[in-house]
Image (tube, rainbow, N blue to C red; front, side):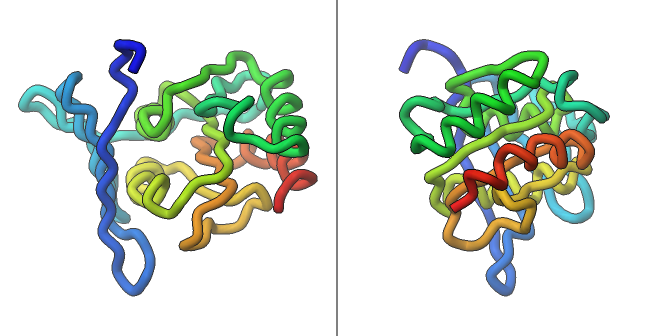
Length: 171
């Protein structure tokens, strides 16, 4: 909407109710992020390369993102986001699902969202996990089929630090 190529197309394949194959596509940039338990890859302009999250042992080193904290979070959620963002190195807004791909690519470290539906996040699960990352709810548990509050993380240590604030606001 603002001329920024951060919009994506998300496609997930479920097996026995769990997302097992996912793709995050950004056609304007000719990028397709594909992932499964066998690994994740970025296919772009005729070439493919493996995806790997980066190490980020401390929240103070993290690049964090969310879509729009003032529109997507309720009072307690906004407070938790504000606490995580204040501790992080850099915060980014309005990346939407492209931020999920950036965690798998090793460019960002955390994406924190709320109010999601299953179709908003299920494609990211195999892509991020296939790159070595994690997708949890705000309690640190595997996300459910209903969506809701979600964290995508590249490094478990950084995730654990963020969960200190997020767990208090978990629904």
